[in-house]
Length: 317
Image (tube, rainbow, N blue to C red; front, side, top):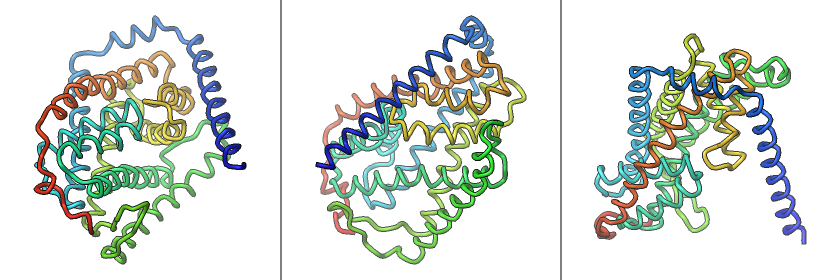
Protein backbone atom coordinates (compact mmCIF):
# COMPACT_ATOMS: atom_id res chain seq x y z
CA UNK A 1 0.00 0.00 0.00
CA UNK A 2 2.83 2.39 0.77
CA UNK A 3 4.41 2.10 -2.68
CA UNK A 4 1.35 3.32 -4.66
CA UNK A 5 1.00 6.19 -2.20
CA UNK A 6 4.68 7.04 -2.59
CA UNK A 7 4.36 7.05 -6.39
CA UNK A 8 1.29 9.25 -6.12
CA UNK A 9 3.13 11.63 -3.80
CA UNK A 10 6.11 11.83 -6.15
CA UNK A 11 3.86 12.65 -9.08
CA UNK A 12 2.06 15.28 -7.04
CA UNK A 13 5.33 16.93 -6.03
CA UNK A 14 6.64 16.76 -9.59
CA UNK A 15 3.52 18.35 -11.10
CA UNK A 16 3.47 20.97 -8.37
CA UNK A 17 7.07 21.78 -9.27
CA UNK A 18 6.12 22.11 -12.94
CA UNK A 19 3.27 24.45 -12.05
CA UNK A 20 5.62 26.55 -9.93
CA UNK A 21 8.18 26.73 -12.76
CA UNK A 22 5.45 27.71 -15.23
CA UNK A 23 4.19 30.42 -12.87
CA UNK A 24 7.66 31.85 -12.37
CA UNK A 25 8.32 31.78 -16.11
CA UNK A 26 5.10 33.62 -16.93
CA UNK A 27 5.78 36.14 -14.19
CA UNK A 28 9.32 36.70 -15.43
CA UNK A 29 8.23 36.86 -19.08
CA UNK A 30 5.74 39.61 -18.35
CA UNK A 31 8.51 41.72 -16.83
CA UNK A 32 10.79 41.39 -19.87
CA UNK A 33 10.86 43.93 -22.67
CA UNK A 34 10.82 41.49 -25.61
CA UNK A 35 11.55 44.24 -28.11
CA UNK A 36 14.94 44.64 -26.42
CA UNK A 37 15.47 40.87 -26.60
CA UNK A 38 14.80 40.94 -30.35
CA UNK A 39 17.16 43.88 -30.72
CA UNK A 40 19.88 42.01 -28.82
CA UNK A 41 19.43 38.98 -31.06
CA UNK A 42 19.64 41.12 -34.18
CA UNK A 43 22.84 42.74 -32.89
CA UNK A 44 24.95 39.58 -33.22
CA UNK A 45 27.43 40.00 -36.05
CA UNK A 46 28.48 37.35 -38.55
CA UNK A 47 31.80 36.72 -36.79
CA UNK A 48 30.10 35.96 -33.48
CA UNK A 49 27.64 33.60 -35.16
CA UNK A 50 30.47 31.83 -36.99
CA UNK A 51 32.40 31.32 -33.75
CA UNK A 52 29.24 30.02 -32.06
CA UNK A 53 28.64 27.53 -34.89
CA UNK A 54 32.27 26.37 -34.70
CA UNK A 55 32.09 25.84 -30.95
CA UNK A 56 28.86 23.88 -31.35
CA UNK A 57 30.45 21.59 -33.93
CA UNK A 58 33.56 21.14 -31.79
CA UNK A 59 31.46 20.19 -28.76
CA UNK A 60 29.43 17.61 -30.68
CA UNK A 61 32.57 16.09 -32.17
CA UNK A 62 34.15 15.94 -28.72
CA UNK A 63 31.02 14.33 -27.31
CA UNK A 64 31.28 11.65 -30.02
CA UNK A 65 34.60 10.72 -28.45
CA UNK A 66 32.63 9.50 -25.43
CA UNK A 67 31.27 6.68 -27.59
CA UNK A 68 34.65 6.10 -29.18
CA UNK A 69 36.08 5.66 -25.69
CA UNK A 70 33.15 3.36 -24.90
CA UNK A 71 34.03 1.43 -28.07
CA UNK A 72 37.36 0.57 -26.51
CA UNK A 73 35.83 -0.07 -23.11
CA UNK A 74 33.06 -2.37 -24.42
CA UNK A 75 35.45 -4.02 -26.91
CA UNK A 76 33.22 -3.90 -29.94
CA UNK A 77 34.44 -3.37 -33.49
CA UNK A 78 31.69 -1.25 -34.97
CA UNK A 79 33.34 1.22 -37.40
CA UNK A 80 34.38 4.51 -35.81
CA UNK A 81 32.44 6.49 -38.42
CA UNK A 82 29.15 4.78 -37.55
CA UNK A 83 29.88 5.02 -33.82
CA UNK A 84 30.46 8.77 -34.22
CA UNK A 85 27.23 9.23 -36.19
CA UNK A 86 25.21 7.34 -33.58
CA UNK A 87 26.76 9.35 -30.75
CA UNK A 88 26.13 12.77 -32.26
CA UNK A 89 22.57 11.84 -33.24
CA UNK A 90 21.77 10.55 -29.76
CA UNK A 91 23.32 13.62 -28.14
CA UNK A 92 21.02 16.00 -29.98
CA UNK A 93 17.96 13.93 -29.11
CA UNK A 94 19.13 13.61 -25.51
CA UNK A 95 19.45 17.36 -25.07
CA UNK A 96 16.02 18.06 -26.51
CA UNK A 97 13.98 15.06 -25.35
CA UNK A 98 15.79 13.95 -22.22
CA UNK A 99 18.57 11.52 -21.39
CA UNK A 100 16.22 8.56 -21.02
CA UNK A 101 14.92 8.93 -24.57
CA UNK A 102 17.97 10.14 -26.44
CA UNK A 103 20.88 9.15 -24.26
CA UNK A 104 19.73 5.60 -23.52
CA UNK A 105 16.65 4.62 -25.52
CA UNK A 106 17.82 5.81 -28.91
CA UNK A 107 21.32 4.46 -28.30
CA UNK A 108 19.88 1.02 -27.65
CA UNK A 109 17.81 1.20 -30.82
CA UNK A 110 20.59 2.42 -33.12
CA UNK A 111 23.30 0.18 -31.70
CA UNK A 112 21.00 -2.85 -31.87
CA UNK A 113 20.23 -1.97 -35.48
CA UNK A 114 23.99 -1.88 -36.04
CA UNK A 115 24.28 -5.43 -34.69
CA UNK A 116 25.47 -5.00 -31.11
CA UNK A 117 24.08 -7.06 -28.24
CA UNK A 118 22.19 -5.78 -25.22
CA UNK A 119 25.09 -6.37 -22.84
CA UNK A 120 27.55 -4.45 -25.01
CA UNK A 121 25.12 -1.56 -25.45
CA UNK A 122 24.54 -1.43 -21.71
CA UNK A 123 28.27 -0.98 -21.14
CA UNK A 124 28.37 1.76 -23.78
CA UNK A 125 25.51 3.65 -22.15
CA UNK A 126 27.05 3.28 -18.68
CA UNK A 127 30.41 4.52 -19.94
CA UNK A 128 29.03 7.59 -21.73
CA UNK A 129 26.75 8.64 -18.88
CA UNK A 130 29.48 8.22 -16.27
CA UNK A 131 31.94 10.10 -18.50
CA UNK A 132 29.63 13.09 -18.74
CA UNK A 133 29.10 13.38 -14.99
CA UNK A 134 32.69 12.62 -14.03
CA UNK A 135 33.83 15.62 -16.04
CA UNK A 136 31.05 17.61 -14.43
CA UNK A 137 32.26 16.70 -10.92
CA UNK A 138 35.83 17.62 -11.79
CA UNK A 139 34.97 21.04 -13.22
CA UNK A 140 32.29 21.96 -10.69
CA UNK A 141 34.42 20.79 -7.79
CA UNK A 142 37.36 22.89 -8.92
CA UNK A 143 35.21 25.98 -9.48
CA UNK A 144 33.34 25.67 -6.19
CA UNK A 145 36.39 25.08 -4.04
CA UNK A 146 38.26 27.94 -5.73
CA UNK A 147 35.38 30.33 -5.07
CA UNK A 148 34.86 31.06 -8.78
CA UNK A 149 31.09 30.58 -8.56
CA UNK A 150 29.57 33.54 -6.73
CA UNK A 151 26.10 32.89 -5.34
CA UNK A 152 23.54 35.73 -5.27
CA UNK A 153 23.53 37.84 -2.10
CA UNK A 154 20.34 36.18 -0.84
CA UNK A 155 21.96 32.73 -0.97
CA UNK A 156 23.87 33.10 2.29
CA UNK A 157 23.93 29.42 3.16
CA UNK A 158 24.62 28.37 -0.43
CA UNK A 159 27.63 30.64 -0.68
CA UNK A 160 29.21 29.07 2.41
CA UNK A 161 28.36 25.52 1.36
CA UNK A 162 29.72 25.67 -2.20
CA UNK A 163 33.43 25.20 -1.27
CA UNK A 164 32.55 22.19 0.87
CA UNK A 165 30.44 20.78 -1.93
CA UNK A 166 33.34 21.32 -4.33
CA UNK A 167 35.72 19.48 -2.03
CA UNK A 168 33.31 16.53 -1.82
CA UNK A 169 33.09 16.43 -5.63
CA UNK A 170 36.86 16.30 -5.99
CA UNK A 171 37.05 13.53 -3.39
CA UNK A 172 34.59 11.50 -5.48
CA UNK A 173 36.82 12.00 -8.53
CA UNK A 174 39.86 10.73 -6.65
CA UNK A 175 37.94 7.77 -5.25
CA UNK A 176 36.80 6.83 -8.75
CA UNK A 177 40.37 6.65 -10.01
CA UNK A 178 41.41 4.70 -6.92
CA UNK A 179 38.59 2.25 -7.59
CA UNK A 180 39.67 1.95 -11.23
CA UNK A 181 43.14 1.07 -10.02
CA UNK A 182 42.09 -1.36 -7.30
CA UNK A 183 39.07 -3.06 -8.91
CA UNK A 184 39.72 -2.89 -12.65
CA UNK A 185 39.44 -6.65 -13.11
CA UNK A 186 36.38 -7.12 -10.91
CA UNK A 187 33.00 -7.79 -12.56
CA UNK A 188 29.87 -6.10 -11.17
CA UNK A 189 26.39 -7.47 -11.83
CA UNK A 190 23.54 -4.95 -12.07
CA UNK A 191 20.07 -6.12 -13.13
CA UNK A 192 21.39 -8.84 -15.37
CA UNK A 193 24.14 -6.67 -16.91
CA UNK A 194 27.83 -7.19 -16.32
CA UNK A 195 30.13 -4.21 -15.81
CA UNK A 196 33.71 -3.60 -14.84
CA UNK A 197 35.52 -0.39 -14.03
CA UNK A 198 37.77 0.97 -16.79
CA UNK A 199 41.53 1.11 -16.50
CA UNK A 200 43.10 4.21 -14.96
CA UNK A 201 44.19 5.63 -18.36
CA UNK A 202 40.65 5.18 -19.67
CA UNK A 203 39.27 6.74 -16.50
CA UNK A 204 41.54 9.75 -16.95
CA UNK A 205 40.33 10.00 -20.54
CA UNK A 206 36.75 10.16 -19.26
CA UNK A 207 37.60 13.14 -17.05
CA UNK A 208 39.47 14.91 -19.85
CA UNK A 209 36.79 14.44 -22.50
CA UNK A 210 33.85 15.54 -20.37
CA UNK A 211 35.66 18.45 -18.72
CA UNK A 212 36.65 19.79 -22.13
CA UNK A 213 33.13 19.33 -23.47
CA UNK A 214 31.49 21.20 -20.59
CA UNK A 215 34.09 23.93 -21.09
CA UNK A 216 33.20 24.18 -24.79
CA UNK A 217 29.50 24.48 -23.97
CA UNK A 218 30.28 27.33 -21.59
CA UNK A 219 32.54 28.91 -24.21
CA UNK A 220 29.62 28.93 -26.65
CA UNK A 221 27.43 30.69 -24.11
CA UNK A 222 30.23 33.07 -23.20
CA UNK A 223 30.63 34.17 -26.82
CA UNK A 224 26.92 35.02 -26.93
CA UNK A 225 26.96 36.91 -23.62
CA UNK A 226 27.61 40.68 -23.41
CA UNK A 227 31.26 41.68 -23.50
CA UNK A 228 32.93 41.60 -20.11
CA UNK A 229 30.96 38.69 -18.66
CA UNK A 230 33.44 36.44 -16.76
CA UNK A 231 33.85 33.03 -18.37
CA UNK A 232 34.04 31.28 -15.00
CA UNK A 233 30.69 32.81 -14.01
CA UNK A 234 29.09 31.44 -17.18
CA UNK A 235 30.68 28.01 -16.69
CA UNK A 236 29.65 27.77 -13.04
CA UNK A 237 26.08 28.85 -13.79
CA UNK A 238 25.83 26.37 -16.66
CA UNK A 239 26.95 23.54 -14.37
CA UNK A 240 24.36 24.46 -11.74
CA UNK A 241 21.67 24.75 -14.42
CA UNK A 242 22.56 21.28 -15.73
CA UNK A 243 21.82 19.69 -12.35
CA UNK A 244 18.60 21.68 -11.97
CA UNK A 245 17.46 20.53 -15.44
CA UNK A 246 18.33 16.92 -14.66
CA UNK A 247 16.37 17.03 -11.41
CA UNK A 248 13.36 18.71 -13.02
CA UNK A 249 13.17 16.14 -15.88
CA UNK A 250 11.85 18.84 -18.20
CA UNK A 251 12.81 18.20 -21.86
CA UNK A 252 15.65 20.50 -22.93
CA UNK A 253 15.50 22.09 -19.47
CA UNK A 254 13.03 24.60 -20.88
CA UNK A 255 12.60 27.37 -18.37
CA UNK A 256 14.95 25.83 -15.84
CA UNK A 257 18.10 26.91 -17.69
CA UNK A 258 16.76 30.44 -18.03
CA UNK A 259 15.61 30.61 -14.41
CA UNK A 260 19.02 29.58 -13.06
CA UNK A 261 20.90 32.04 -15.26
CA UNK A 262 18.58 34.89 -14.31
CA UNK A 263 18.93 34.02 -10.62
CA UNK A 264 22.74 33.85 -10.72
CA UNK A 265 23.67 36.40 -13.39
CA UNK A 266 20.63 38.68 -13.43
CA UNK A 267 22.40 41.16 -11.15
CA UNK A 268 25.30 41.40 -13.64
CA UNK A 269 23.59 41.27 -17.04
CA UNK A 270 20.37 43.01 -18.12
CA UNK A 271 17.55 40.50 -18.56
CA UNK A 272 16.95 41.21 -22.29
CA UNK A 273 20.60 40.59 -23.18
CA UNK A 274 20.77 37.51 -20.96
CA UNK A 275 17.64 36.00 -22.50
CA UNK A 276 18.88 36.81 -26.00
CA UNK A 277 22.11 34.93 -25.30
CA UNK A 278 20.19 31.93 -23.94
CA UNK A 279 17.81 31.87 -26.91
CA UNK A 280 20.74 32.01 -29.34
CA UNK A 281 22.45 29.26 -27.36
CA UNK A 282 19.37 27.07 -27.66
CA UNK A 283 19.18 27.72 -31.39
CA UNK A 284 22.83 26.73 -31.94
CA UNK A 285 23.20 23.90 -29.45
CA UNK A 286 19.73 22.39 -29.27
CA UNK A 287 17.43 23.13 -32.21
CA UNK A 288 19.92 23.25 -35.09
CA UNK A 289 21.59 19.93 -34.20
CA UNK A 290 18.17 18.35 -33.58
CA UNK A 291 17.09 19.08 -37.15
CA UNK A 292 20.28 17.46 -38.43
CA UNK A 293 19.85 14.56 -35.99
CA UNK A 294 16.39 13.79 -37.36
CA UNK A 295 17.95 13.34 -40.80
CA UNK A 296 20.88 11.41 -39.33
CA UNK A 297 18.55 9.07 -37.46
CA UNK A 298 16.62 8.33 -40.65
CA UNK A 299 19.87 7.54 -42.50
CA UNK A 300 21.11 5.30 -39.70
CA UNK A 301 17.80 3.45 -39.57
CA UNK A 302 17.89 2.98 -43.34
CA UNK A 303 21.34 1.37 -43.32
CA UNK A 304 21.37 -2.42 -43.55
CA UNK A 305 21.60 -4.22 -40.23
CA UNK A 306 25.18 -5.21 -39.45
CA UNK A 307 26.18 -8.73 -38.50
CA UNK A 308 26.03 -8.74 -34.71
CA UNK A 309 28.41 -11.64 -34.44
CA UNK A 310 31.01 -9.69 -36.35
CA UNK A 311 30.68 -6.33 -34.57
CA UNK A 312 29.53 -7.20 -31.06
CA UNK A 313 31.85 -8.34 -28.37
CA UNK A 314 31.16 -11.29 -26.15
CA UNK A 315 28.54 -10.60 -23.49
CA UNK A 316 30.86 -11.88 -20.79
CA UNK A 317 33.37 -9.37 -19.42
